[in-house]
Length: 416
Image 1: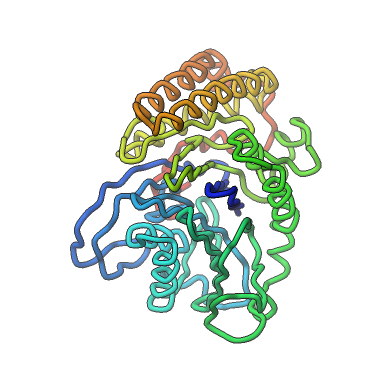
Image 2: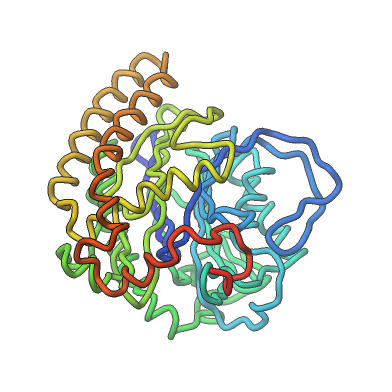
């Protein structure tokens, strides 16, 4: 379960996405250089005919070939959402929606290219197979695809699809939204009415999250990074920390697990300034407790890695800090104040680099990562206390903590 948001502001644009997945599931930030085709491309479950790949930066679940979100060297960015439909056969292993996303990024030089590449692969290979980390989970997918110039929403149901071009802003969540107002479709009539599955769509909290996401976009009055990050930190009805950490909130854009629903395990923002994309990621779960940091595309420096195991270690350190916060070994309010201070500094310095056309931008990204790392290193003693069984960790998180970090690359959910 996830939320993806997009807004055009003058000639610039903002792409935002939270990846909501199983509470223990690492989401890794990994860079893959361009490569030549080698006959077949092995995805999560099946292989497809391979083609030359563009360089890509992915935000991906540890055990899946594909990704929840990412950007390629041409500036094409895609985010996907689970959607529930009436179509049968989802358990048959085909391409996962996340595989389709990665293939779209590897091959699409524009947003329109990526849109039609995903549609073509969907029609040829279909979608299906378990997408759950530690429990079976089957669904279809929707996508928000942009290159900063053109933006599209694509929704699917099995091999069926409908897409709509976005003019100013849009956000998608875990429910179909395209009716008969599409710009392209595999079938005539009302796409939502024909394919919508009401029960899972209701219990996913997607209606409330989609409404909250739209409000978050409306609150971005100008090209503001802080307002953009705030849109990914929205909590439904302003839920307090005791509720969020113990009971969870499936209706929140910043989703907290607590029994029903998933957890926001990674967050990404792409800011298109004069056509050039600038990427910011958390590299960690729980955006209301995480620091957004700028990264330089093509460089493998924290929080972006070339090796998935290194990215996992980075994620795990931050996840342990989050759980020490849930256990009240670290004060949540003080931690958020530290985050705000860091991000405010990063954003002000970012404005300077933009004015200078990004000169020395890579060094700026390195310094931001170092400053954030100092914050997390300062919590070592509290994390040690948590690992010794200290603190007041809520029952849900006590159970999760017993399996945190185990067999995270295993494909079979039973091993986790």
